Length: 174
Image 1 (cartoon, helix red, strand yellow):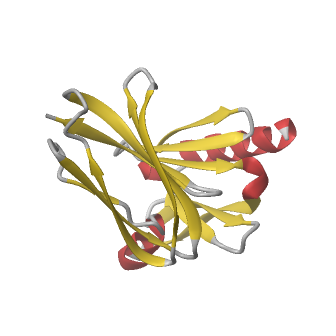
Image 2 (cartoon, one colour; image 1 turned 60 degrees about the vertical axis):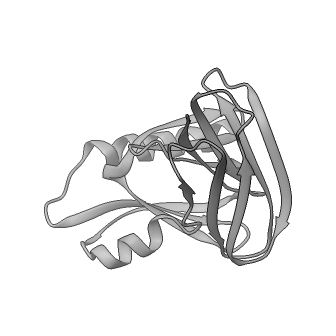
């Protein structure tokens, strides 16, 4: 597992430092469940590992998380820029959290490629779990509403997790 992490870090370090005019550089992941995802390298802020979990941090504060064993294979690619294709593949879950800032209810909308056990968690800035909701969600469009009127004002991270992926977004409660 450590060797696998090292290969991913070397590949990502190499591609982040190289550039190609007229081409979009991206990293493509194919997962053991048959799904896949691609990320434009200019959107990647950093990559961290927590044990066997890889965290892909984007510049917009989104964090994608995978168990390394769920990655079947990955590859680096340079392709002619096609903006529409890129937008379609960036975020298969298409997560929206609104309103942001919020005061009473937080609406979380997301699309799933297939049915999954989803956990929605809210963490404070120190990483303390404030609340968590878990449920089975069908494929397609989903929405959860979380009442937050009992939570103190401040900045939090909302994490939407499935069996193999998770996304974190910053939310402000006022």
